[in-house]
Length: 387
Image (cartoon, rainbow, N blue to C red; front, side):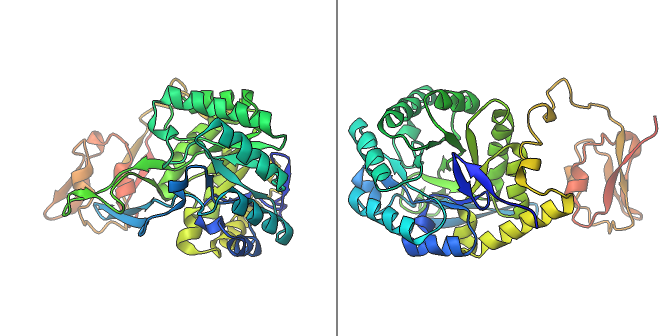
């Protein structure tokens, strides 16, 4: 059986899967469910100094379904807000969790004053926090709505402030809405962070066209879903070779393969939120099982054997991309001439013949591959051409 153990900001974890800060980690009984289903560590639902954020509106979740040409996707739109507790009650729940659970439980804080950052951090350290996540980029906080340069400066300043206040490891949860995520991560490392989370949720807006107003509570909200994995993968592959601190990948995890992708990119651990909310805590076992299955198939005995394997020089630059046009599209026996691919061909290489059905003009085909992706029957494929 492959070994899933790992070390994150100095903490020993039985596996790299971390329950991200959310309602799923707010109370001990929910944390216990995550532990019982195999999670490696837990980040508690964030504690906010700003008290209005402790009162969540209802409803606060919406699944926005989208479709185009038969392809379906969804956006998980949420306005979850912070823990409903004050500092003392939150610290008590941390103490209870530490006594009842055998896995690391990491509190998360978001403050609006310098005094708050220092006081909250010290109080939770005294309550036994093994590490601390700084939620300086919450979609509902104030930092996210400032300009990118000011937001980065504030994140760095807060990191230094908390670093001076406590001795435990600190992890900074980064916003994806930054001009230069890599430069930001480096600045946070220099400021004393032991790790970074790439990334928090995006801030978005959806509009009810019948009511002519924003959906849910009437304002902006965080949004995510399986589509959200690609942006953090891009930046983790670039950051991994250049950072000495740990990276938590976050966003878009819906399968064990997604966990693998984050680890291949260079993530130390992988945070999961939406999958637990939409599938329940049972999804944890599925993700871990699929991770182990992949490692067994590949012959990897431990995570360090493949972490960061797809990063740095593995990512081709603009001048290194193979630009040869040596492939063309060809029909296979599975084509039923449905015609779905015809209007999508920019090169007019695919036509519908009234007698023969779909036909491809080889001389006009550019080999772009879109028709292959459009066809759900595998009725077209790319083949290498001679010369």
